Amino acid sequence: MIGWKLHEGNLGPDDIVAPDERLSWGKTASLGAQHVVAMFGATFVFPLLMGLNAQLAIMMSGIATICFLLIVKGKVPSYLGSSASFVGAVAAVRAQGGDSSTVTGAILVSGLVLALVGVAIHFLGSGIIHKVLPPVVTGAVVMLIGFNLATVVANVYWPQDQWVALIVMVFAIACAVGLRGFFGRISIFLALLFGTVLSWVLDRSFGMITSLNPATGKITDHFRVNWEGVTSAPWIGFPPHTSMVGGKEIVGWHTPSLSMAAILLVLPAVIALIAENTGHVKAVAEMTGTNLDGVMGKALAADGFGTVIASAVGGSPTTTYAENIGVMAATRVYSTAAYYVAALVAIIVGLSPKFGAVVAATPGGVLGGITVILYGMIGLLGAKIWKENDVDFGNPINLVPVAAGIVIAIGNTSLVLSKTFSLTGIAFGTIVAIAAYHMARALAPQHMKDSADGAILLVGGRDSQKEDQNVH
Image 1 (cartoon, rainbow, N blue to C red):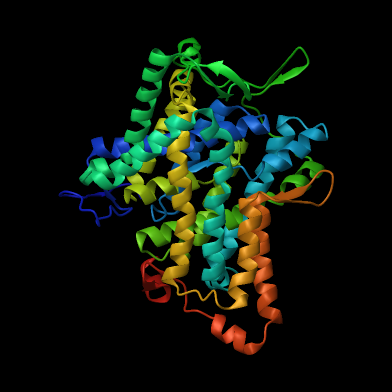
Image 2: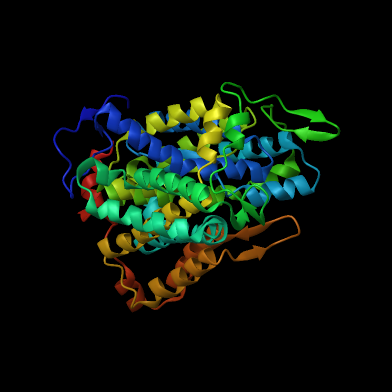
């Protein structure tokens, strides 16, 4: 769906901007910029961890997002960024001697499988989702996805400049509750600008800081704001073709190649994507007060399609992004127009190494202050799903399994299945929460099952069955 109703008048504290609405194009562009900032760090980093070209990944994420929005007809506002679920499997493929073509070939097959799963869910109906993912499990998946990101804040962003992170966090909170109307909605973006200026001022006033340097991964003396990469980057440039220089692979765009061994290593990541996407769509449904079960299958298929087209040219796998869901939670603006803006900016970034270097130069301390809020808000959306659906945690069926899954995910616990494959973090925690819940139901006496059965999933206080007819 392209074409939005203009949301007129001032935004009150309880007003929302629906997916089929938009603010003025100037304000929409600002919101789109927030989404670019939210997705950029992870979308840039995960390809690097997988040995793929980050510039290409950014560009393809924009193309995949546009395809996603068109497939779901604008009903699910979301951004498709680089997926972290494949990092471990890709490392295993490379450890066995696989090159980038082998990696992207396995990712492409995984995208096809995810798309087929989405098609199956679409035609079988959303009832199967309610059976497999009742509200107690759905809330747990949303929560563990958000809180799993806490280690990113604690280990990556916050240590780079703890005092800037703290000040930016306080500034963002103050803006979110103290500013009215549109400016209150873009508190994250304002905090980013404020934090960057603050970091520059501190550099000029006090000189270098001794902390974790993201460029080297070591504690060094360095400036908070480093523009060396910006000045050296060209304005326009397409990602190069993959080549071999001195026996070393310089990765760029390339065509995938298929290897059954690599496919078997990467394919289990689809389990994580199904759970991750389902949790994200449920989170969006909760925020917008709309039942989205009728488009759940389309959303899964759209993400699978996005992964296919991205990996077909050597890009990284995609997934709906929790970071951008956090931006929507903070702004209460769910307009898909902002996502189209973000997607177009990502495509431009993919064609402009200079602009990409600017965004990548955002100080780590600033990201620490912002992400500590965004990631926490994602996790608390899971608690909101529990509250809206009156989940009874006095019942062991609800309490024990999801408790185990959440702690496994937050602690980034791993289950090593072989030398080449393990389940970690979100994937492991999700599987435990789902499988252990259904095991508990199967073993529990009938009176526990009866008291554990809640209503059909309530979204925004409404019965999802009554809303289902409005989805199609």
